[in-house]
Length: 216
Image (cartoon, rainbow, N blue to C red; front, side, top):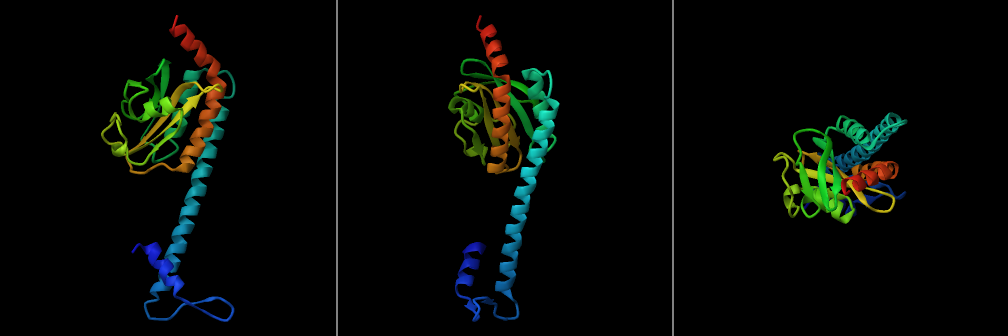
């Protein structure tokens, strides 16, 4: 039985006083009381960690918005965004963009960390799936992802967020790898998607123009 299940089972069999308060029996070891306190502390720690992660992302977003305030092109925006994200979070071990450079094909853009894969079709890997489906890929275990491309042998988990134009075209994906298993969660996803929406809205026309030139 798990510790949480055991705790629930123990609480269900406890006695209550006339005012409905739990009566913790004194059996010397206080095991039920100790386990209850440990569970409460663990829940509190998780709540605090989530709050801190939200706050960190908000601070990073503020810095990125300030840095991009003024004349700025798409390449400079990607490089600035990657730099801020990569240096803000300990669980970010590779951070970069893969750009849509021709239909159904990604090519590496600005990044920080070890060498990335240079060229990725939409049909392959986590980045390809994010681009193909225009949907975030939150991958707790890259080894369990069908067709995962191992650009780095140390990567254990990954999150890839598509950057889309307002009319739904995928102009790039933001890829973050971690050497830790299950490193990313819904908080990472929420804030990265918010950042992706800003970039997609602001730089869509520049990207469309570059694609048109490339197809001439």
